Image (cartoon, rainbow, N blue to C red; front, side, top):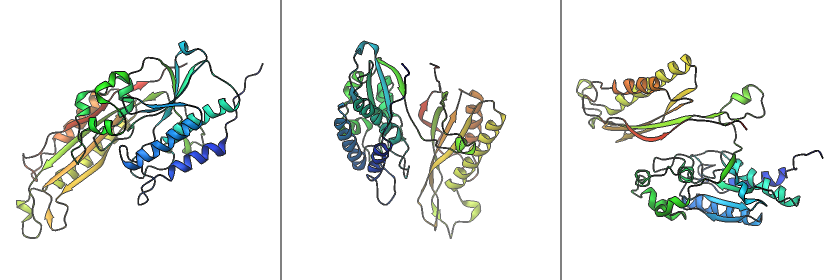
Length: 339
């Protein structure tokens, strides 16, 4: 007998993605930041759709929303399908949710065809896969892999709430994270949009992931001296933003050099820059930035080069009064296994 793929209902899949897109900050579409009321509203919508598809639905202790359909031979383990429903600011309609909605549609297609798979299938909406206000990304997946530790749970968002308290607020339990750790998942599938333009530039429809880059984020706080911008002579200024700006350009320069030298993929970005006080008539006294670097393989040379350039910003503007770099996120690279 010839085996064929089950037909998916494209209209139903599209309707799900568009419906969730309506749950957004109207002033900044499409935005559903993790741990916010909008995120929880989206989660409630997803849980209802999971239940409608016949999935047993729960939130594990790491805060992941999971829909499960039992296989005919549970001993074979779990095939997990999913992604995330939280977004970066103005993150769009498809990033993350396309993977969750596709998993849901696969289960519905099986149901419509009267097929019960041998493997148990789980659809997972991982908690806070995007960088959160607590300075940490991949919160739910860290919980499933057993790498969400107490130091991470004690991270605070700008208002002072700890991540462990936020986890409780969305249905998780930081005191029982061992229950979230999994050893029964045999395969994982995530459909994801291309977030760059490589496939598009080559007119390719699909790319198969062969590796996941490692990520490191570093926070740097420059402490200068806030002074009146009209009465403080240029020669007497300690402008924190000048030092920060030099660091931004240095990070870009080093990243371009490392990317050109190869042979592996390397990028680095300064995506957050906070200036205090932020006023046109005040010399910036404090500046905070976050450097994010991604590499295909561990690259000590890249780390040393970036660190050297960052430390070199002991410019006259801030003299010796500035904060040293502080790592806030580290995730190792992973090479995918071929089936």
